[in-house]
Length: 278
Image 1 (cartoon, rainbow, N blue to C red):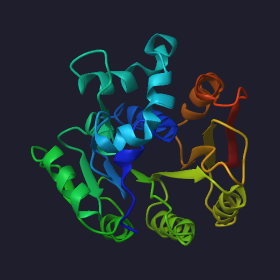
Image 2 (spheres, rainbow, N blue to C red; image 1 turned 90 degrees about the vertical axis):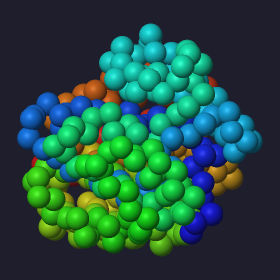
Image 3 (spheres, rainbow, N blue to C red; image 1 turned 180 degrees about the vertical axis):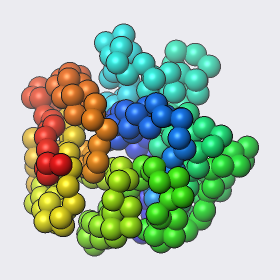
Image 4 (cartoon, one colour; image 1 turned 90 degrees about the horizontal axis):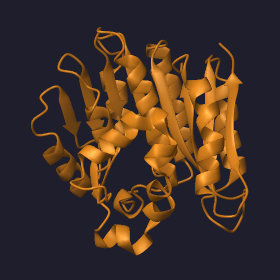
């Protein structure tokens, strides 16, 4: 379970959908002065060098972030600004993980909880947040961490759950963790990242959540190819519970264009829909 390293995949298409949705949600939270808690259950290292041996071995960022031109997406200015601030030139050598994306938004009176089990990534994460007293990095299981800090004292919160899904049971763990957390804190925003390798597996996750009694669930998915039994990951997405009211319209405008820019087969593959109404 600790073999996955995101350094091989940083800046890929999966990161695009995850971080674009994350930026939109965090942008909504900071519109109010009242504090919020951010919880990242599978934080990774926080920052990735796209020139590293790992990134260059797969070069997934070439078909991801490097396919997008900031001028084509003025509504994603904040997302591109976060990336630009990490790089000394227009060349993207460094790409942020979700913790560094969130760091851009977390104010002194907000709190961040970053969980990462892999010892190397956890150590790197600690170094990236050594100056942030209100953001705690903990080398522990993210599901246990989520359970320990919920419900948040701020009574406002965003949870990002994006495991590697190296074991099939992870899909059930995700569903159970979300349902348990939602039972403690119904008004929180919950974002679940998922990879589409086997569509029936994703459908089972969706059905579990849809039958849980949880309301207000939306799905945003970005793909590069049709579903396939042989290709590997063809798409990935975010299931969002209690999304900001602006998120659906924003993503419905973005996803067709993003899908056109990242396609690897000539087709356009995306989903933007409501799984459960309010």
